[in-house]
Image 1 (cartoon, rainbow, N blue to C red):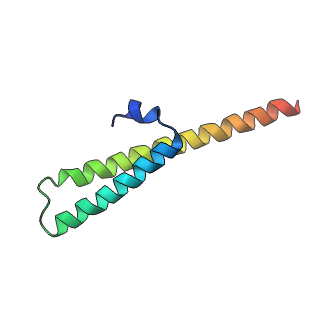
Image 2 (image 1 turned 135 degrees about the vertical axis):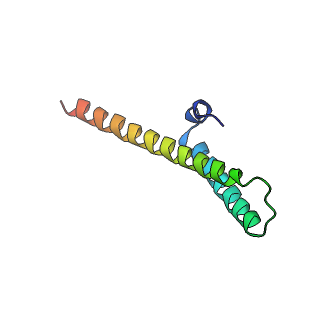
Image 3 (image 1 turned 60 degrees about the vertical axis):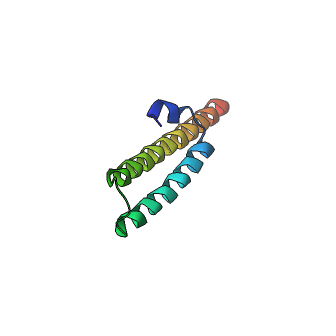
Length: 77
């Protein structure tokens, strides 16, 4: 998926996608060890996709906290 497509997803769906990719990454690593993996670049691509999703989840969580804190400050004035 492209980053634009991933940004549109909620945190729960991103977490689900990340879990699927982690399982896929594990399968790819095992296939590579037993010499059944034809395209070893898939391991790297999967790892980078997991990193992208982790970054987006962190961004969304920080944005939610910042919005919550801004709302609390506005309410106390």
